[in-house]
Image (cartoon, rainbow, N blue to C red; front, side, top):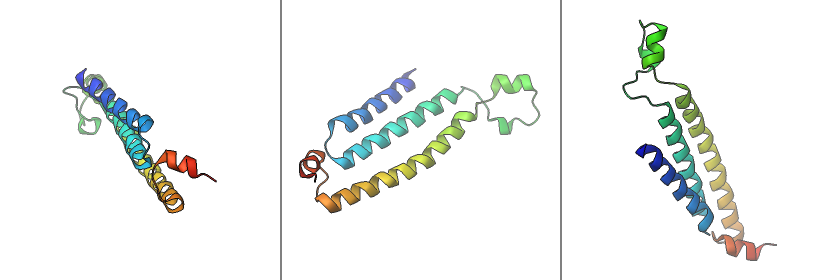
Length: 116
């Protein structure tokens, strides 16, 4: 239960970074923290104390697999999420660099003032 709470704290910290900060780079860091907290939560959902990965359970019956096996679906989802998150992060950094080239600042309020 404590790990779920810590995942929630990490999510709220990223959300605070996203909402309260004016620097674009800090907003990108907040989005990345939110992504990592969701990945951690998904891994925690699939965790089972004393569980064994299904690939290691060669000579077990279906009943033993259901009883002791760890769900591999959250792990596959997190691996996919990591790859997609890396692509989105590269896109965000690219847009951030283009904004810096045009406005010479990372401050969102300054960019809104200079818009035109």
